[in-house]
Image (tube, rainbow, N blue to C red; front, top):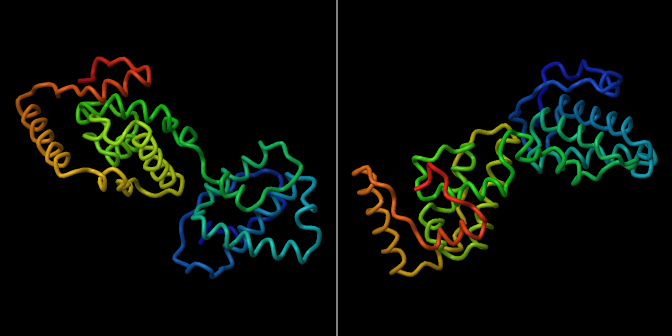
Length: 252
């Protein structure tokens, strides 16, 4: 649930005037139980929506509809992992920028509460993917633009990226899924951790391919111990060429 300290004391007039919402944390309140603070936050969201969207009565024509909508939105915010006032602030700002006269659905508002990677100081997904392809030959020596990019690449597998294992499209899709998980964690104010790894290529790998992977990892470890550059891979070169990437001066 959402906590905001002395939120109950904040008035709807202040919010309608566009004042910033204060920072908040996650409460231990069980899902589905609405405390006074959370109810106050939802009330304030609707005050903002009514101030921003002149045609809000199209969605909520009377008090009964408004009350039902507030209950629905409370459940929707809880189920979608919207846990902090900072996330709500992102959503309200996107409402202001939408230019629409009509209030958003709960699904649209939830999407607006989750900022894009660039809004959090991370590279956008395509740039992060290109970096992962460049860095996979020497992940330990690469100057990563953000830890989330490294973790997403690690979730796919540096060996898989070097080998082009499973095909470029599958690798790109797996990277995107992992990166989205990490961006979502940051948006929710959570600490970064390695995302759940997809099994689509692991499950398809043959015994020979698994043995090759173990051997290649052992070789790379020996090369690192001897201070030698990692062995380049033809599949990775193909990926680089496909993306139009030239090897940088800190690329193996």
